[in-house]
Length: 384
Image 1 (cartoon, one colour):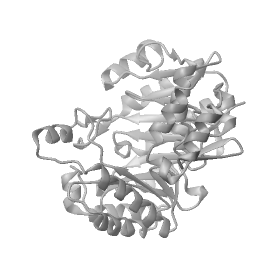
Image 2 (cartoon, rainbow, N blue to C red; image 1 turned 45 degrees about the horizontal axis):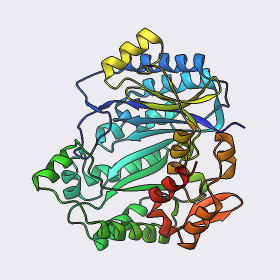
Image 3 (tube, rainbow, N blue to C red; image 1 turned 90 degrees about the horizontal axis):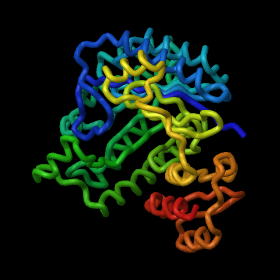
């Protein structure tokens, strides 16, 4: 039984490092990206030579970092390598994360011509004061122009927004979210501001100059998100993702939620691939120079050997991701991965608490259960 598979491409450079970001990113210093593009293509070739055969790709996702800093020709070269090595499904989704600065917006038409079908715009807020607090290098007017330009270019458009910002009330967030919902994008991903260890915001919290939103307020903001977007015609098809219709859902994220295979290339990229019949984890070397050296020396960017995953690890990853979408954790994927169904008594207990429902073997969280997603997932994983 085969599942869809895709490719994740990590572009490591950003014009500015945001104070809340803990991703594997580096300040851009004028790199033209040619050497990195060549290494990513060589890494894809190395994966193709080692992986078990599989179906054509249903998704290619350029993340980062800031892949909208790539030249459209570089993006096109990577897409072409994916098509040559793995094949693309007739409806393959090709997504790219983009910052809405005027300089990057000027590349949108070129990215569309290169084969990109979907842009994920890091709008984060429609308020200039909030954007300055978040350390963004664009203003609200630039964000609005970026959305308009993306739509005009014929790109499926998704907006990333951050809520639970200092000083934000439910009423303020509802107004901002309503405005975002009216911009014409078909997908919105609102994320709660999380203080990650080692970030500038983490240091600010420890100095006492930044106070995170209380848990109760964060929960109210989350519930307001669903209500506002639902009224605007968006379905909460996953905990942090809302779409206008099934066609607007993220095909790439579905790979993660179903524990399907994805090839991770670029500095620090993680992958889950089938090697000699075994689901295995790959992790690329973090630093750009180390990644280039690894590909040159070994033909792949893996930082050491691929790691076969134990059934316990497979189960933990499955449950932590599979319960996130509204369709729930399906029995078909459990069979494919060799994971047993959770004990009936445990499922019944969570159902009696109002946290989940079961239909045709799919275990899905209720709105109340979504607030306890990790707790429910870990209880299932520990029952393996």
